[in-house]
Length: 419
Image (cartoon, rainbow, N blue to C red):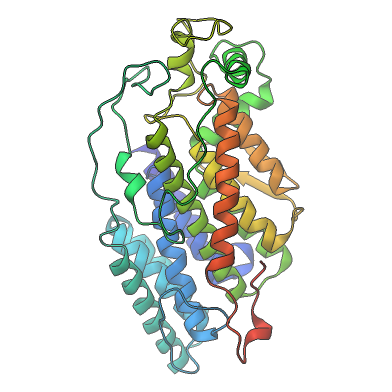
């Protein structure tokens, strides 16, 4: 059993033993979800999170009818929203992670024990299970399980396998995964990256060459810390923590939290799909390839360094735009529209990095650190981050505006659309 799996089990046991974020069942099961999906790659994490949180939203919303549904699940009058949330999250996670079934079953028992027995509880459980089954069926053939081969280009400017593993291109098929909120992965495709002979390319080349090398003396300790942190922490993990902490501080309702976490994870997932679609449209090379071949790019102002080695390991797919930026700026756009630009203090942590925490007073500070993390980590040019930021902002704005809006009816006053 791997170290990350053991960590996930320990964290899940702690979550089961004591309520988190004030005992809200939507937030509690979001935290359980984070621990369960931790062993997956960031793209799979985002997909599982979106499925889970949309099932939870659909189950809760069937009982409250505050928002427009995603699927159209219905619930009998009096069905418990809390029981529906627990059953939906449990059913989705146990379906995809049967190896964690016993721990998830124990968490379900603990959660449901806080809800009074009766027909409302029974009906809520049935609604949650129905919402989960519908979401699982909807995503059964979404393209996430169909890896595709890739033949790298060899011309300057194009992606090639990177050291130290020189692994083949990963996640080419993710460009074709069905989004949760966008019409297609290409809907917000980034404009082309800077030309290799441009001044912008040279400036950003020089920056990552100076601060991103493993032996750089220009990388402050705090930039090294954020590079390590966000190399180990996915956008999904960071921004779900931020959302649940903001909701706890503001005391938002179960219905509000269900909608927020659903839209948030739709946007994160679709940001990653869009970034991969753009990456494999332009096939732009990574800094380690570019800097080691700086004498072949046709730009006389880019000095070659054949020994350049990134501070963190380069992912095995093209550089432009940054996937972490696309997903994170989508998340930031959603959360700023819901909680404002200055939420209560946010503390990010990761069980895989014991003793390391990052503290923030604005959502922008998080994206600023993520941008620096990828450049100071030596795996992205600054223009990769800027393109991902713009793409993510478009996606976050679009998903929040066009999905799960207020249902204008008797319950409209209880709805929080937060556009």
